[in-house]
Image (cartoon, rainbow, N blue to C red; front, side):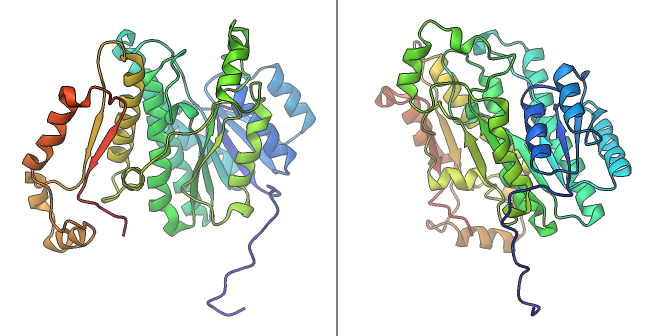
Length: 377
């Protein structure tokens, strides 16, 4: 083999010899993912969870003796998640994959959410996810392992659910998908892959009510797809693939496992550029803006009876902040803008006036990209 050749890629979707950690795996979707990992040859699987294990965890542990373990940690506290990762490596001798799965949901109208409700959702779903991914990445780099990080996003990150609205939840999961893209870009230099999975409706303790709705059959006909909820184990294949060496060239993607939700919201090339972190490496900024876009879509559905909700996504705009950028960087940015100029704040006024006027009376839930035709390098 010459220096320019790459090793022959693995094609088997299996986890033989790998140590996998999964946050929030004491029950529910996380435990289903753990079962799939063990079914596909994982050497050891660790659940990182704040709660107690239950009967289902004990049954799976009995099925795979000496292979399933639980470590207590709170993902919203970075020190505890880092300590949990260190403990796993000390006990198992290494770590090869991290499934960032721990999350919370809260369904009610946007006008009824309290500050505490929103902070709780974002602390777990977004900040906790970032802390977990970063702890895993640092461990991979220290070990010299080309590890895999897989986030659990949600179909709510693509489109709102009118029956069970949760604008903050959808925004947090849209942030997860953006975080996936940005971290994949940053950590590729270390051989670390970062991807996400977006489950649709899954049969868990939190969704028992879904098939009990009187018009459930009618909903299934409307959405199309499989006429049932997914079993938690049916999500596992996507995670196993992304964790395996068969996915060695797969990074920065989201795999929807939605069976019944229907088609996804289309994204324009400009929107994809935004989501992928079109300027410098500013993960938190990009994730927050992806959340704003999803928030606009969610509120447009909830508030359709009395107002319209849209978003505007500016590209590079001449502001005081740009005065601190090196000229070399500014010149590079200009080469990526077909208009060959940065926008002035005045050039943005028209789009806001249009969105506020009666001329946009049939437009809601839209995102208008004003970037001079910006393209990815």
